Image (cartoon, rainbow, N blue to C red):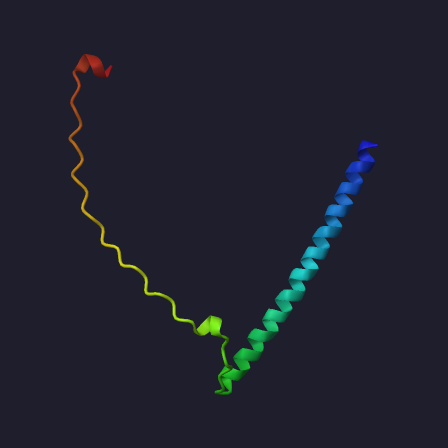
Length: 84
């Protein structure tokens, strides 16, 4: 009974993995085709209109100046009998 449950579990896991990989390949092919099409347009000297997401201005990054740290305290010397 346990071996049947394990077999079914691995079977479902394998099927799910194959389906997930198939969807990822389908999406990757679509993105790759879009990149090839955009590359052909750029090589031809034409520019494709970009959606607003790509042309939106991003805020300027903040510039942070590091403040100097105080010097570390000198290590305290211990007597020889305390070090051992």
